Image (cartoon, rainbow, N blue to C red; front, side):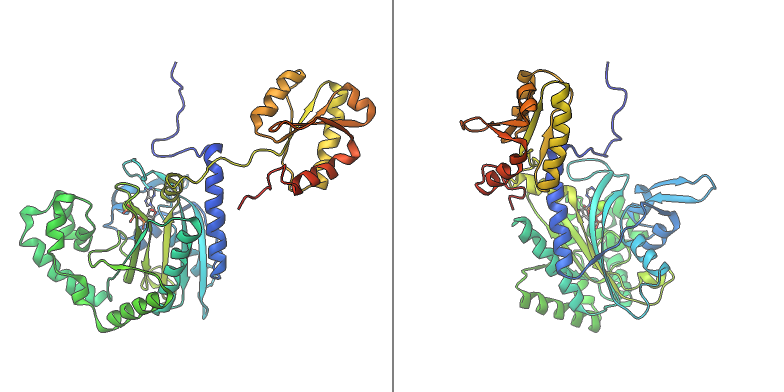
Length: 433
Ligand code: ATP
Ligand code: MG
């Protein structure tokens, strides 16, 4: 009979064989964010629906058709967060974190979007995002981009290309928008269904179309960069000069617009061609109007989010090992007295050697079955407690991976033995990096 319970479509289990890779990725993200002075903020998974509608924009894919929205028992409309920026801004306003101060923050966790599941695109996926508030200049944009570039270097990922663009001020965008509508309206019959709809609601988003039949039409469209206001142009030029100074290579992509409504001036994406169609691993930009729009002071904001599933896929494709570290030591205990002695010994060894990974045999069985488990565990060494060893206050030590001699030591000397074995690297060090 088929298993009656399966995970929700587009929502994945991350199994133990994969979780070590996730942990390494998350550790690298944390360390790199800390290296630039960013501090973690932890936010709820659920917010009022209105927060997302107001910040992301009513006529975006996310708000139109991708949100997991439900009524709370008291009738409030709530939504599982589809992204992290709105909640982060909400929290900062609510707790007064934006009064006459700057903030560099990061968040991590699952996001939820009702999208068509495919490779690199899921309904529950994970992001790490960085956000900086209270800084309106191109220096902080450049810092965030340098931070993201360093992430790929630390992760050993070499196949990502940085694309940057400027969306200009809202006035410049409005003027450009008019020209764009004129251009597309004159070619209405060449637009796909989505783009025809967007022509009326959100014409800039046509530039974001993933439909290959639209590509030529989009390539010929008037360029946003020809319509920038003077301030945005200076901002964009300064950003480029700072990236040049920091040695971060980039491409200018005048068609780059972001799916979300709240961006202005700088936008950027890191794109790879190693992942197939879902090639954007990191996306971000400036959103100066958002904080005021959500009821805060007029404070600048800029940030990015990385998609962890896509990074894990890149790391795995680059051949980075995903299995976690096996135990150093497997403790075999045959019989009831040995089991009691084994618990005492195992706890003492963990006290004395905090880095030791010791797996105790549980579930009973004879020596033969226990040795099979020990072998299977990947441990380097088996410690064996039988009736004789317990009577003598001793423990037998048996190397599992190499043809070393078995020896018997007093239990009180095992910790010193294991410490020496670790120094000789007979035991793999706990952190191979
Ligand atoms: P895309 O154009 O790929 O749909 P987006 O513009 O909707 O991306 P953002 O909202 O900016 O993406 O999210 C930032 C990053 O989060 C993306 O670059 C991607 O790496 C990741 N991401 C977004 N949606 C998904 C998803 N459904 N599944 C997995 N990762 C995702
Ligand atoms: Mg999307």
